[in-house]
Image 1: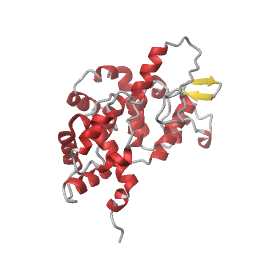
Image 2: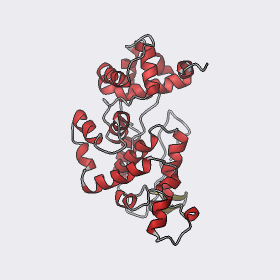
Image 3: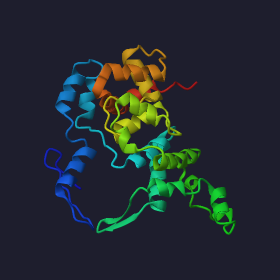
Image 4: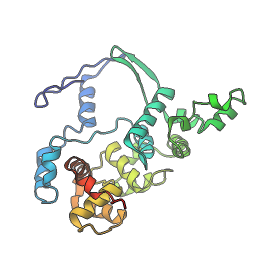
Length: 273
C-alpha cells in the first residue's frame, strides 16, 4: 500500500494465496482507515467550538485507524494500560511472532495475531513454562511465555480474557448492543477498566460516542473547559460524551494530537520541584 500524493488516489497492491474478492478488500480498507467518515462535517463541528477550532489546523486529514481483529484489539488495549506506546507495540509484535500464524509474501514474512485458543494455552510466565515441560528446561531457557513479551502483570488478564471469549462471550454480539450495554459487558473482562473499554468500543467496534479518558485527556479537558480545575477522570469522561456526542471519539483523537503538536501537552505536565 502506497500513497505519495496525499491529494490523489490510494494505490494498493494485493497479494494472497486465496481467491480475492476485490469489493471485500475495498470495503475493509475503507473500514480500517475510516474513509467514509465525513471529515468536512466534523470540521464544522470543531470550528463551532472556540476551544476545539485550533485542532483543525494541527490535525487536518487525521482519521481513526480501526482494528481488523476484535480479540487483538482487546489484548492490545489491555496491554496499553499504564504502558508506553513503544513498549506495548513491542509486546504485541512479540506475541504475533511467537504464536501467530506465519504468512510468506513477496514483501516479506508477516504474522497473524494468535487466536484466543492459542493464547489460552500459552504459559503466563517462565515458572509455568518450566512446569509445563516437566522441568526439562532451565528457567533461563523459558522464553516462550507471555511475561517474556514484556506484558508484566497483564499476562494473567490476557489468559483469562482468552478463556472468556472462547467459552463465555461472543465478541460479535457486543457490536450489536447499544453503547451502554457494550461498555458494561466489556467491563466484565479482566484488565478492562473504563478507559480500556472505551478504546475497544471506539477502535474495535467503531462506536464514535466512546470517549477514552486518561490522565492526559483529563488535563486537556480541564484546561480547556474548567480553568485547570482538578476534575475526576470519570467526570471528564461523562463531560466528553455529553458535550461531543457521536463525535466524542474523534474529538479525543484530535485533542490529544493537537495538544502534543502545539506544545500544550508539555505545558500541562506537572511541574517538578
